[in-house]
Image (cartoon, rainbow, N blue to C red; front, side, top):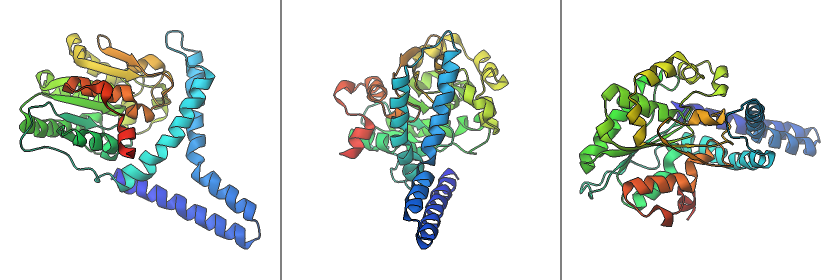
Length: 313
């Protein structure tokens, strides 16, 4: 469903740009043609700038969190401007099934990986990861969470099916990696299926474990569930044993333009790792994140390139 929606968005942007440029040229205003096309195609950069402005405003009022310097926010904004089109204008709409799951029949005696995307994403987000994992013959499955705008409570059964497939191939507990809302979906899976023993490690990336300020503008069911102190999040926390978070690594950052205030991306008792100067989507491709996964798979993570770098080779 998301792939179809994002294909439509991309095609509409192209149609608007071509129509604007054609009319401007026919009217003898070539300069306006170029300006209009640039404005349409880079509109998302301005939208991202508004998110970073909100992040800075909230940080200034947050006495407990980490505060990013303006230069760090600007660098993170530019990094997200470069990264976001690859994800939202190419991989997810047009390449969501380009990288198949990898479940080698021989199992190879290793832990496998289950990749869980976040809000308004699909499995295409993980294409660079899947290329890198397959290159090392690591079993893995990437899910699609649907319904797109439904309750997070719909997602644990999808994750359980993926975990069962990896378990069947490896005979070992899995490493689960969740980006953004995906981290909450994994926590809901652990709750619903009482699956602590089936999780070798849970690694979350920019997940709104304690909600996010930005979710106050969300009107979808899962968006409302990610609001700070939402009834859903409070109930989830009450249902979790404190020792569960001992198996979590939570990556968070003071330049995350989606999950803020900064410490909302952390969990008590987890290994909470701050990723400085890195925005929300780009954090999923940070070398430290991929190396943490490698570490729990028993690989030499320090010698491995980040997924984005591997995909470019």
